[in-house]
Image (cartoon, rainbow over all chains, first blue to last red; front, side):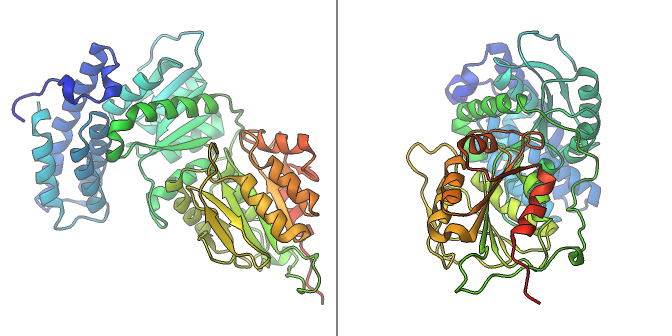
Length: 112
Length: 364
């Protein structure tokens, strides 16, 4: 995806389509903000030099992105974020960097 | 953030550090509830609940600044309010975070709902329906003050309790199985009852707790951590072990097959609302063991377990029911009492000692 995605009707989950337009836009805007704030922190941790506190923040970031991606109808990103959360909860591993890269690819279109 | 109150609707405070989740939850519940405030962390939640006194609180556990568990403790010790916890941590046994959900229940939260998983993305409307239904139930629950720090099992020195033993096989009147059913408010009630039992408990214990299948391993792990008795999840074809607490697995019913305490997992009956079903288990216990069992029905909504407990009593088993004052929801035990299924109705703290009294002391 390139640029900022509109909430394309054809991919909007059914439950969201029933929301008033302003509520849908509000959800999309909130998700854009979350992705823009949390994805860079995950990228920093993927470089492999995180403190324990930074790892915990990254775990929470992955956790939040996973839950939010589910709501916004991004199941692949949600699964990737959940897998990343598990790796970070375990203290980090060689899997973190590729998972962060993959998550970045899946959510790039939501970055502000 | 606070909003104007619609006087006709019950009020809710939403607690989640994710703006997306807060917006989604607001959209999911605002047809039936007035969302009076949103909190981003546990500290904000405690302050808002104290100030606004909502009908119910909808709270995530994984929160910054002050975690959800600590916030629940504080709220329940100062301004007790029904709290519905929703959590993504539905893990396997031994998962620390999945046990946090159980700890939240022990701290006084009324119910726990699993967050939708990625594979549920196409069924979020169903999730929203389930959320509203659970929130409606929680909003009607009468909660009581929970003193802070009451997460640990009461420390009862084993020397204070009589030892108990299974009676010889040729004497059929010994208690061989304690069967316990519970629903809303169950985990805390179970911990209270089970922690009163002697360390060298001889009968097997079988627990049927209404719970989503994914939470059952966490319940077992949480109880295993806090109790001196081993706690396991039941498996079809195995025998219940003396002195061990077996939790019925989710997704179906757990039946006692015979007087050797072998169990069988069966699919739920068509139209069965509560899974695992307490009635199904109790009826099987009545058939397999008759007077050699004790049945206990604890807090919970609905009627599940009432008919099964009556069956147990009709076969000679001792039957106990939790009283209204100590029940989170006096539904199941009330139904059982009305049927005449309860031989003794007791406050929660007295149920464990009553069980101990029912166990035959070891002859000296």
